Image (cartoon, rainbow, N blue to C red):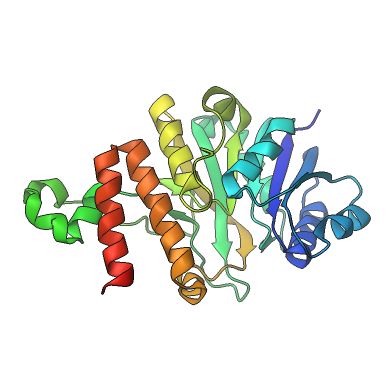
Amino acid sequence: MIELSIIFVNYNTSVLTCKAIETVYRFTSEYFFEIIVVDNASKDNSISQIQRKFPKVKVIQNKKNIGFGRANNKGLAIAKGKYILFLNTDTYLEEPAIDGLLNELEKNEYQNVAVAGAKLTKPDGSYNISSGLLPSFQHFVKGSFYKVFFKPSFYENLPERNVPIDNKPYKVDYVSGADFLVRRKVLDKIGGFDPRFFLYNEESELTFRIYRHFPQMVSMIFPQYKIVHISQGSSEIDKLGKKFKHRQIKSRALYYTITRNKFSGVMYYIASIKRLYLN
């Protein structure tokens, strides 16, 4: 019986993807697992390299880049595991972190954990973003020119970001999509990623949906297990230019439209585009 399905979405990252897969095989041994790679029409010979090095890996090859969430959903459609791990191609293991996470979710005390993640680190060992607060429209209003149209009670006393804890598991609003380990029974009830998202905010919306359907369930980081995530976060996005920032804005506006209402999404989009192009 397959206990875990690990899904990678590859897009011209053959070297990174092969390293990620190799370390999964090297450090994961306590559970029966399968690896599924969904390729978004890469042009770097990714598929041939992956199939040559890892013949047991299941490969789905898309004819075009359909985005992160939709590609993951194609992997989910053929996955057989009790648990699903959406793992970024720019991650790799240096220890049995996946075994450790599964061991925790199998414990009775964590049966209410829908989504789990490890402590993400950069290659130099420093902390990388492992979790976050679900996007808050109140936070947005507090920092925008729309503030004058709302009563202070609407945006005061807002929660701060989760403070990482190194010595014990802790609850978070959502787990980073870089290592998003979720129970299959949860996804069977609510579905996978919303296909309207092309990139960014997919894991936030999915987590929001989990809480709406399963209010007793939580997301947790288990920092005793570490996974390296090469991404440099926002500093890397800064280098990508306005095209990618615009895509981020569209995704966040869609999130507010889905989770709140269309008017909120439009408000966010207008304010963010103003900052991007006019400030």
